[in-house]
Length: 441
View (tube, one colour):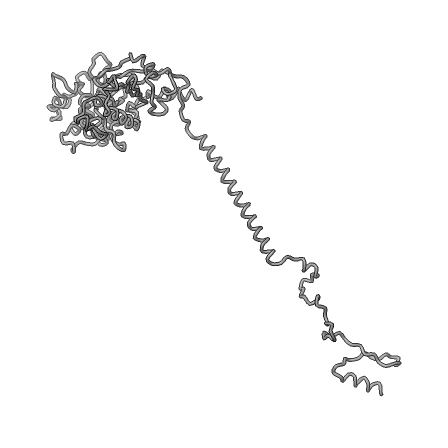
């Protein structure tokens, strides 16, 4: 009984826990076993401090302490991103470089080869005449090409034309001023000479005698221009010299269209390049009788006396006398009369051609009387349109004259000759180009 009283007393105390049951043998006093508690006693904590950290993944303390801090992870991420961008940029740059190289190679392979000079010839400068446009040539090489300037084509008051032959066989025409010394060559003439070179260097048409080069030397004095050569001579010779081959109606129509296309081209340039003087004496014919309009009449104006005194000469003086597109249209109308009638622009027997034709042009029924009597046949509808164009071109009021563009449109509707049909079938430069290409091959 006494033992049960002791147990009850201990169980009622708040600071004590339930005791373990007493041993069954009943010997000795009961032992009290305390359960674990979070409370600490004395100066020692109940749980060690190194075990207080929360570790939900179950990692040990050594693993946790070895992980990098947050700022180190962010820095590593930035470095990784920069490496990715650098690699991408480098690849793009490499692709662009490869594409550029491929494009350059393809472009070079597709590009037309530039024609080089002749493999053989008189000299390097003369060989480049057909390649570089208007090179400056020496008198010595032109003298060799023109057989010591003995091969004269025509001589006029202002200039002399020579026929020259290159070592390749290509023929050229050399125009030289009639002035023989530097003291007789005025500053005005020198200025006009260089201005004409500049103007003609811009002209490139199959029905035009294109400029190939020039020569200027003071001792001995020479001022020359080198042009294309046409083997069949001048239109004026074929119209008025009976010994030369006669031009039939179809050939004359082709010549008319070729001249009109050329003048239209000159007038459509920016700025326009009106011809100095359109007449049959400056129209050359090729082997197939295509017309080639030459600009050589200006030589005469270079040596003509200016209306102003020498003291008042300036760069703005007329060099040569001013010409305009309206004057070209008028001259073209007179040239049409000359071609279809076979008469000279002026003669002592008939006077001026315009005055002679006026009596026929007034009445359409008389237009056939204008036709060259040596022609075996002609087409009436083509004659009608040509006579209409003549009347419009020689209109005294310049404001009522048509433009060359309008003239070409009107003539082509009836004559049915295209620009390609009016051009030379074999250009004088064609053989030179063929030789250059074959030499490169």
